[in-house]
Image (cartoon, rainbow, N blue to C red; front, side, top):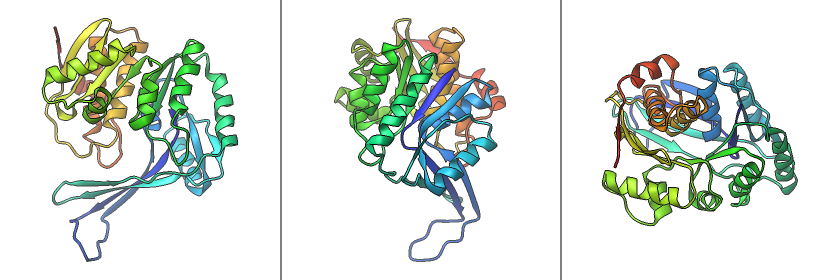
Length: 309
């Protein structure tokens, strides 16, 4: 069982317009809502592959109810902590003509101390899970120590905890030595406090996090793929070229792919291969749609994985 944790879920509203213009009315040619949030996306991919999982976190208000309904429609199991605040709605606007994408991400509702305590208490029933996968941002006034505390709690009870976040919450979480982290270029650069340009820069930075206590470091490099560094070695995984329709959720899909491979006992070279295949397959989808198993299986065959000395 994999438990995904999304402290700041959202309803992703995907809007497609013919062309973005200023100072004029634009009528959408397509509007669709999807359940959103990093951990929730991991759950959606795991469910697509038939893997046992449950999505947890904080939801509230009418938007929260809409989010639950959308997850039910995708058969994603969820056990959220109810809050008084209203779950946020994010906007993803796609320009059909230029293929540019604009993302508007809101801060999210306030989480009260009693709601936070209720959530932490509920996490005790997941101590038998194989993984906790923490993803995404924190909502308004939520303690920046939340992810650090969850990693500490999980590790103390034999759970392997994954962290995919940013800013102070990510930095504090790193101090607890999570089982796996998946930073992108900007997050990895901030974590090691230097700019990254070459493949070797990424490898050196990932190895630095590994030395600091992270079990597996998966550093995503966008269209160039990802590298993985662990006790088993280091690998560079390069995907085939595809027509990218949206990048939303690609990193979360990568996390899901890596977790599935590790859960199956595959080597970490195969883990990064499956992770990159899932992430790449997600870019084939419009808006915030996530990878389809059939696409992943085809792309998986074409991902090139090379060991790094």
